[in-house]
Length: 355
Image (spheres, rainbow, N blue to C red):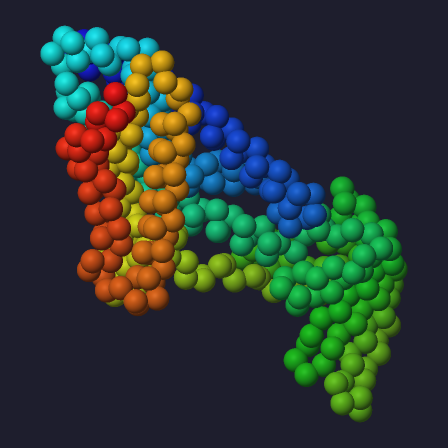
């Protein structure tokens, strides 16, 4: 019991540190991207923190197994390098006991990974897609830069303003182009007022002192109207209803027979299994002779991890393309690390060469 707690603690400490570092790196990278989008007016600055939080939840599906795998390699490699493993073996405790402690910890992490993969990850994708869709749908003065032509609401409107007072919602020297059935509407006004407009809401654009041109595409029935005040109603933007399987609830994917849905569902189911499999594989991969450098174990472990990750991606693509049926699906790929684990555990050649 004492040994199990010691092994778990030695693995857990670098694992939590690694997760923190990976999350910080990922958050910094995501923050830079979202901040540039906010600076360009694509999304409001107020939603950047929410999007980063959601993206962090999504990445935990990969970060947790990765941090656990590398932490097991680091901890057990140190045991071998500092002769602690030799002392443990001399006390009559073999590698199966070490393996049992690793399995217990990996199963706990696998349960968390499974919950994230099956429930939290699709929920986070749904929320982030919705937030980004609403932000991009906004017809808002925050997106207007003076002296530039900009497209709004998926190019439904082309807007130009010579001067913009964003705090007051006031524009001067305003040009607006839009389509009105078979005609093109051009509006020029000395000034205009644009209140904030969000997806799903119907607002108005108030123009003052200008001209409204309705141009017939055939050039035969053009209309010119001079006005002092004119209101243009901005139609409500439909909410994003595009089908995205990453955001689809797991139960819907389970009921679907579409190859891409099957591949996505199998990926979600496989993440906890992959977590445990990588963890137990890390035990024999961490073997090294006393006072041997740690780089050998890490290089080999990273090669195995990258190879498994790439092969899983290939298997997933094959299922999506219909080249592989739902069974064996992507499951056959995990036979490779499983056979590698069995070979490393029973191979006397490997064991003797590493010691």
